[in-house]
Length: 187
Figure 1 (tube, helix red, strand yellow):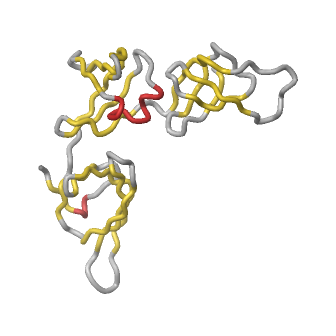
Figure 2 (cartoon, one colour):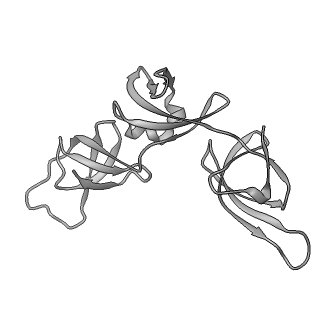
């Protein structure tokens, strides 16, 4: 495994600390008047998404994890698993919903995701920040019920339930923020 100095940390680098993968979110080199320099960092656990603040002595070697990232196209659901095709090699891979996490709520056929693996295990799935999906089920908007900012639940074609404005109906296509699950606009 490649080891890098804590002096060479950059945002986005993935580290393997005691068998757990972390991405560097933020770092700061600190050189106090007395004592040795150190690096204060904020790290995100790739599996649990929890944040960790860690301080390293300057110049200490840490293990860098090299992630393999592939553009993969979602083909279809096979029982519980999602079937993806590598767009480079055309190999098909079955992925469990637990490995996809929240991304599974926004995947429709032919959607492309960037799947990062480390030693054969999926560690992250990146999808676009917003997607366009169809409303599969919602209550009809009642005429005259136009309270500003009022919302109602709506089920997307993927099965995810979001809050939408009262004027949105079944069959409408809406843009949804995949990071927060919020309705953005009707398409």
